[in-house]
Amino acid sequence: MKKLMLAGMLLGAFCWAQERPRLLGISHIAVRVKHLDASRQFYSGLLGYQEAFTIRKDGTAVIGGGLSESQAASIFFKVNNRQYIVLVPETSPDQSRYGCRHRD
Image (tube, rainbow, N blue to C red; front, side):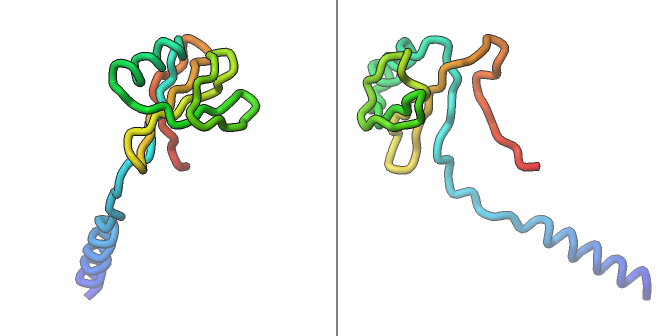
């Protein structure tokens, strides 16, 4: 009886662990760049993405962007109504170009 109960508990735990929420999409990708203006030209000029807004170094946003590299903390390019590419200037050369956040 104990073996049957243990098998049932393991089977229930296994089935419960497999239930995961459906991934509905990715809202943005952030890329650390060495030269913000050159990267801006690549994403807007070559790839054709629209510069949606820019975040200044003081934390305020400018719609449409166009700020100089010395004023901008990050630049958001609109991919579609729900997705953006974010360019962030690197702070040191040994930083990872692509970042991800992990939940502890």
